[in-house]
Length: 403
Image (cartoon, rainbow, N blue to C red; front, side):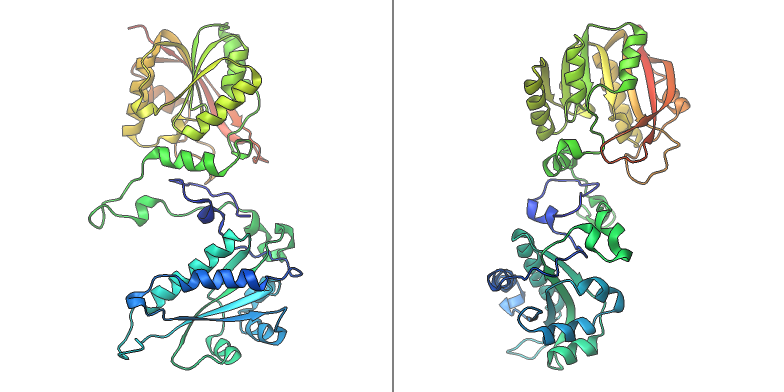
């Protein structure tokens, strides 16, 4: 149901990945009383300060009380009305700012109401429903529409219903329905022990999340068959046999194709799920490939290779420390006189989507100056299942210098 998440940094339960705020609802399909009960039950069991449960919900269901539903809809901001009119249920979330027993201020009431609301929305996602929390409404109009007592605070209106295809969303919102989702990095929202010291998740977690959440064929870097740049380089160099490392093998398409050419292929990736998927692809194709889970920045591989193929790993590293660790691994694993076939994002590619490292030939020559000779560098493209316009790439052949 949910859009593809970008820049994910750790695997999460499917429930969290699938929940998102759609604006495309099926206006003809009601939410059953049983489904509503489950959502409200989830909200009921949300945590709260002293177990106060300071939240209340007013459920306006178009199929059971169209008048109540219309009054809440009319209280929404005009832009929200455009799409919320297709949601069969509108739920007003409110909270009371004082403790019931003491009458003292409850400064956690809004926080607790938010916990109840997200519990409701997560349960909705578990049931295959869609939800969208709104803050755009006339508070007084919502209060009037629902008969909410004066001491209760209106916090949100939640649209609830069955998801529809993106094309059914009103015209101003259709692009939002298909645009990938992204968030601020963990390093920006979490601090380690003290404010200002970022908490950094292991890099492997993000890759594992991508491969768990998205079918390999839908990943932006998926490429069926051998990449044309790699095939051309092998032909130009006259390379048809030897020990080859497919670095960051991902879905395994390159490893399978290279094994089919007669190379003795080892394929590595930092994601266990990616390796499992690639292994299954190789077995189905009858390709003899050795797969290993390995981190190029802290590699456990120790054999020399005649060829290393890197189609999209190096450009993941923009920090000098990571680049240095990558280079140290490549120098160690590549036999003197052997070749690194490197394909990365080009510096001229300005898309916000994609890896942080963008390079031109001068950058590669400078970064690989210690231990490598840049044989050739040419402009190229990355084309994938979701790239209507191919992304600018740089393809390089680098030779390991003699020791």
